[in-house]
Amino acid sequence: MEQPAYRNPLRTGAVRPTELLPWLAAALGFFLFPDYLQLGSQILIMVLFAMSLDLILGYAGIVSLGHAALFGTGAYTAGILSAHLGWSEPLSGLVIAGLVAGVVGFVCGAVILYTRGLTLLMLTLAVTILLQELANEQEHWTGGDDGLQGVVMEPLLGLFEFDLYGQTAYLYALAVLFVVFVAARTIVGSSFGQSLRGIRENERRMHAIGCPVYRQMLRAYTIAAVMAGIAGALLAQTTEFVALDVLSFERSGDVMIMLILGGTGRLYGAFIGAPVYMILQDQLARLSPEYWLFGIGALLVATILYAPEGMLGLAERYGVRARREAP
Amino acid sequence: MINSFISIAFDGLAFAMILFIISVGLSVTMGLMGFVNLAHGMFAMLGGYIAVSLIREWGAPFLLGAPLACVAVALISIVLERTLYRRLYGADELQQVLLTIGLVFMGIAVCTFIWGPLNVQLDVPPYLKGQVDLGFRRFPTYRTFIMLISFAVVIGLWYGFERTLLGAKVRAAVDNQRMAETVGINIRRLFTLTFALGSALAALGGALGTEILGLTPTYALEYLVYFLIVVAVGGLGSLRGAFLAALILGVVDTAGKYYLPAFGAFFIFAVTIVLLLWRPQGFYAR
Image (tube, rainbow over all chains, first blue to last red; front, side):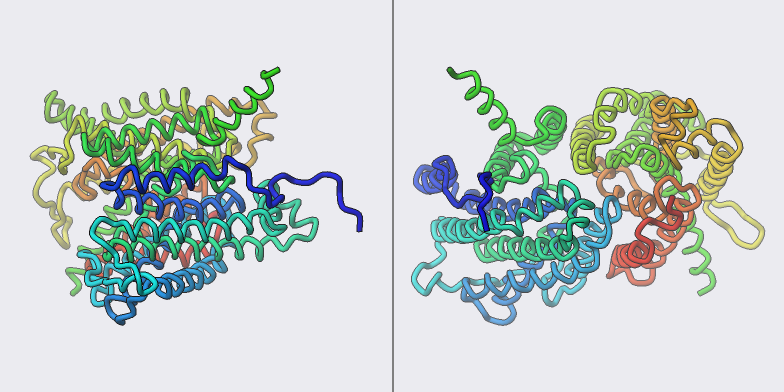
């Protein structure tokens, strides 16, 4: 068969030089801010979480206010494995947590992805709050309101202890993020990723040309669930604690805001949005929580009105203009 | 047993009525413009706070302070609608969700700044305190008053919706916007009007309901989910649907919290999921 002359740049496997920037920044962060490594690993975890949301929101166009359900499932799975079942090997715990979250995501997705719009929004929201109530009620397993205590981690690969400064935690989170990112980038560039974009742009047309819309969406939702579960498990393992708020509606909202600030549908939005959001939060909330809340609200309104594509979209727009104006 | 049953039904009903008053405006505006307005709870919260300030600090009588708060909130909502909401009509729901969530955050920050983070309550005048004897049983006067007001609102809304020209226009626009525009209905103006009216009703519910829902700056997020459930389960733009949904939600939530407090809000969300899966477009879908 003849190859089409046009090649979609998103499908080429070539790595652009700018793609190295976030990884360089993350590596530099390790050496430049040794006192902030705990915040750093939390940022990396939220990048991973936001990236998983990007897969369903930015690519498949599924608006979910319940992504924390999957994050929380992963966190509690990893936490309970260690605290109650004595399974404290981090890597296998991570894999198990991802799988459990994937199963939960598959089951939820299979039920809710038949709906659209407000109904879908409400269902994702209701599932999250339901899980949170359940976690609150099952105190024996989850520690309820006080959080799950007694999570301990064995040394990573049997070699690296989780230290007090969070050096191991930071590098562990960075390595996991990198592996998952490579997987996500491959998925997004595949024909499956293309069909997701098609569904986002025009669901009916995709249906008409024979794309199994529901099945593709469910597949994307399940993959995103695994990623979110891994992010949650990372949080549980690196902090050795699980608080009830991993399942909260607020966390779903936070991650969505991070993604929107950075820009959806380009995977790298998460790498901009999550650090900006979390560093601002860290600095402004120290002044006063009201300043922070007002600031993030105003930032969100301004983003939606003036830069609906997020910071990366803004950068791209001006980048293209600059290139065009250059002789 | 019977006594607790009656008081649960009574409290559930009072809660349901407040939910209905607050949510009905959201339902109509969502049905009319398809605008997912997550800031609706903020209007209810503002109504409560403004009423509290008018009555406590300006010494306005209760029966004047509450309506004035509604007017104030209606004006605020018109300004927001003209400046911000209008830009996103027809945009995808994600942008609407995020814009209004941003507004909610700003609203929470402003309210915390002005009224502080602690719970505030509306000062109830002496003639609404205590209990009232309804023949077979004594009920708290204030909640009975809430119910009377609510029934008046329900009847007024029904009349306005079904029997006036404005109501006919709104119904026409909800059913088929293009057709309504074709026959000369000014959709934009109609929407501004219903939006202001819905916000005023939310403010009324917010002001009257402080005794049941409490009033803290996080109110706008805390109860948002309840209002959205009423709208989604009832069906967008449906008065009857919103009423039925509020009734179910209010009673189930009150009963659940009374009989099985450990489960908290578990029941209403379980019920919501079941109802939405049974009827994805709500009870009375267009």
